[in-house]
Length: 481
Ligand code: 5AD
Ligand code: SF4
Image (spheres, rainbow, N blue to C red):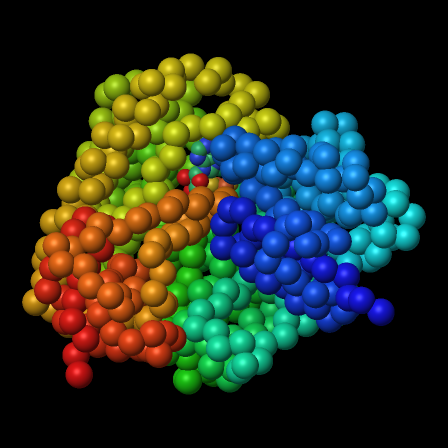
């Protein structure tokens, strides 16, 4: 019998990238053949993001394109999975009646069964957590949790020749920042058992993976209650992984919530040489009034204190942030406080977003989206300019230094994934004056992009590069022989 062909496209954050990998693994285990061309597929799945309207629009347009094809081929199965499915629910079926499957991020273990049913019955299938739905207990009973089985069943083999991989330590989010859909789409925070995380990291390292990025929406909030009085903290987990998997060259994690970052976790980063000294800790804003409206739970001064504390522990730590401009009622002066905070903290990189009202969030219910688009755009551009200037200055300081680079390959464009609820920012790099053939790209431990000449066979290797030139987005270097 011919194997059914599956096409899966992923939008949004690292969590979605990981979910897609696990989903694909499940389908392959059930005999499906993954294909890279949508036109060849019998089953088309979109793993979606809902964090800003723009992310949703991409999915709407993909679905629009499928209308004719589904009319011509009613046997085609179309599924929308991930955060948009969860957020929009049955509305999506009304708007696109030819969609067969809706599956939220907390229900992905059910997906192969749903696709099978849709193929047989051609009826609509939906698995959503729902608003009041299962905000699960915060500590997971792995044996009973089907979703946990999805992560546990991950298949990795050395023949995949993978360099990097994601490992989830926490699902969901309990913060309820007023602008954000994630607590509604991914549900309550659930911590995975430390042993499951360690085993997964080890499995990946055994298969040749060089760099593992641990994932959680507010990752430093991790605390696993063993039920016998013992609790594994985030710092404890970092030490345990570092010790249990000595053959993993790089361990990193995203996304950190500024308020919960303890000194133990900073000490773990300082003490464990294979943990990258990289923090992605979104500040979101520089005004205390706006931070309150956002329900962030800290004032700008406390954020700065955290950054200073991190640098006391690790003077060389690379820190990246996220900012939202144009939050409802934001004044020019308050925007200026955001720019001041960025200047004060001198981030290595910032992901900057224009506020996008999200249905179902407190901010959209309570506050009019009253900052005009033109003002949002100009604040966005201004802040990008501030960050770019800092990037340029910081990168120039790297000239003459030697850095360790994990070679990612020969790609023309570097795609950077912001943390939290799903930011994807495409960054092209500026070409140096004399760009030549055979350019490779890789990243430092601090997540800085480095471009240098070398053979493609270096992909996946850790090599030393001497930095000779720098632009605001990119470092340029020569391979140390
Ligand atoms: N509008 C704009 N940006 C948002 N983010 C989350 N929700 C919104 C929204 N409604 C940003 C935050 C978060 C990142 C992943 O996306 O900065 O850290
Ligand atoms: Fe949670 Fe981050 Fe969204 Fe806040 S911005 S609700 S911490 S996912």
